[in-house]
Image (cartoon, helix red, strand yellow):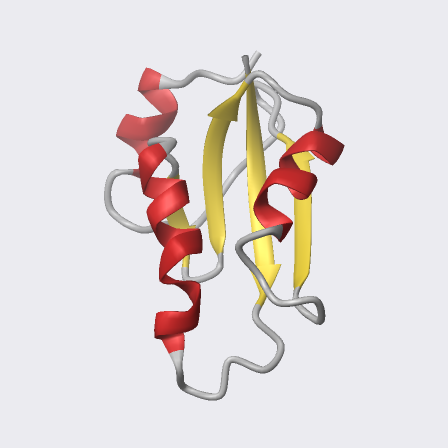
Length: 94
C-alpha cells in the first residue's frame, strides 16, 4: 500500500458542488482523509497513474487531478484539517 496526496481543481464548478458528490463519496469509501478543501490523503495499492485514471471518471474532462506519493519524514504541514495526524498515524507512509 502507498500513501498518496490527491489534489484536484474543479475548473467549471460554478457553485454546483452536487456534480462532484460521487467524487467525494468515492474518496470517503476509500477512507481517504481531506487535508485541505481540494487535497486528500489516500492509502491505495496502485500506481499514481492508476489512481488518476480511477478518479478521472468522477470529474469533468476539463478538471485537473494531481497524485503524488507521500514518504515518511518527507512531508510537513501547517494547520491541516482535524484528524490529519490520526490518519497519518493509522496509515504511516513508507
